[in-house]
Image 1 (tube, rainbow, N blue to C red):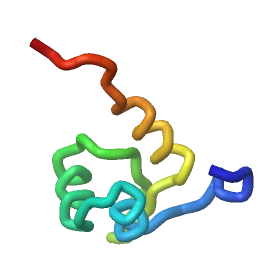
Image 2: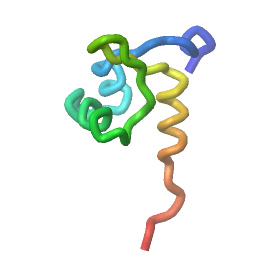
Image 3: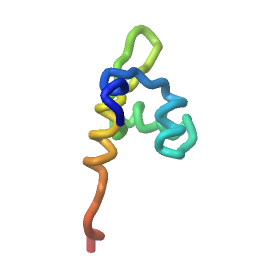
Length: 66
């Protein structure tokens, strides 16, 4: 992520594109409270680009659970 993108607000569709999933998956994660942090203003949802990257980094697993 470049310095210009640090405070960037992303739409659900942009997050889905970044993660290569369907936008419905991102919405379901939001409803289940398991996805990246988001901002809610009325019924509009946005994701901070740097928070998304932190969520991705925190989701990396180094071993399989047995």
